[in-house]
Image (cartoon, rainbow, N blue to C red):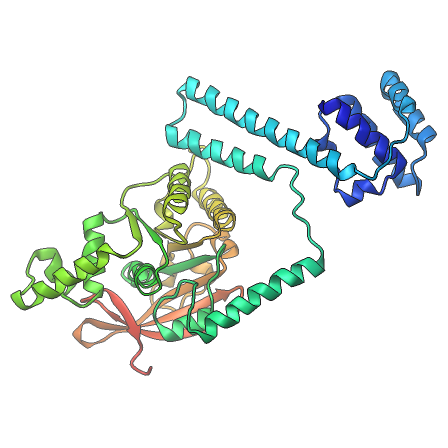
Length: 419
């Protein structure tokens, strides 16, 4: 059936070569090597002639394969009126073949026992996603794009007027205003030296998105256990201080507030993983949470502790570069926001940081849509510190700085004293 359809389509192309462009026909559409060879010869002939010269195409094919040339010259032109039908049928066949190939490859990997279940699932998912998009015509005219954009813009305007922001926010008005809307497919980097509060800001971002905005959020912590994270979740509410929660020194008059805060977290759409991760496992977990819980915000704390399956001799900067690239592609593929917590180099100690101080790889700044550098200026009274949040890269808006206060007792940021 496939070869019959392929030959009819070649005959239609001989009749009207414009259907190649109209239906975006490519050699991958043909399974038959003979039909693929004919199609390639036709495309080459179109470079030299405004219309298909059947005789010239025949001679070109004869130099490569005499039998294919004879089959080609014997084809009779066929009406191209229903070319779309044959193109769609062939695309569907190629897609099903690709899916079958992916499933067979997955079965072989299971028999080999060389990879973990999560790694096999991840590779299989990637191959199936590729198959879904195989031969898919995703082009659109500017007219269609404009119509779609008109609807998107109307929704944005309505949401803004109704104060219904559906993109994740920090809950710090000045920082949110500077960063502007953080849309799906974007990567945000929060960087700082140890103790600058980068994890606290990432937690604050995830908590505000989940609790105040109802955006399902996923937090990967490779430095702290889930109970240590809960200490910080509760401390950020100011029900008690971090040191009291960690040491069990919660006063009687604070216990009720702490219990209320814990209870309120039950309903928050936030999910936590607190173990070391490889890149393969991380991708698999993110895909699973997006599918199961519609997660739209993912925080990775921190990037330097992620491992990737590369040669041990591969430089760390190259490994981090590949991790950064894969995370950006994953954000686009799944339509989520990914927040990467990143360390700064020692060169940032005591000086105002720039993009050049991001540790391990320049790819981090290249792949990110926004980079926020935390710069501690001076230590204040009552465990408050003045910290500048420097938006050093903003792909969709202006760069600048926002002055914040870091409350160390409750591990959270507030607007600066001048705000």
